[in-house]
Length: 84
Picture 1 (spheres, rainbow, N blue to C red):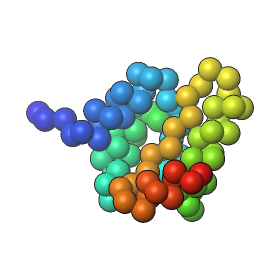
Picture 2: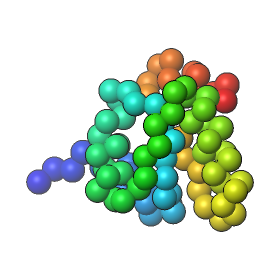
Picture 3: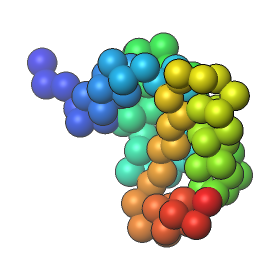
């Protein structure tokens, strides 16, 4: 059975210590969401990519030693995240 790239990405996130991702749903990252569900990684949906980045930053600051992670879709999703 083949494993999707999204599921591999989620497995790598879990191995890196990610417990929660902050994201705005987009077509390019749906496989990552499925992988996160398989890996018991919590998914927090936000209303803007900047919010996802800021929430991931806050998560890591409020939880010392924990990894904050924002998962953004391609194109404008990434450029919106850069300014967060």
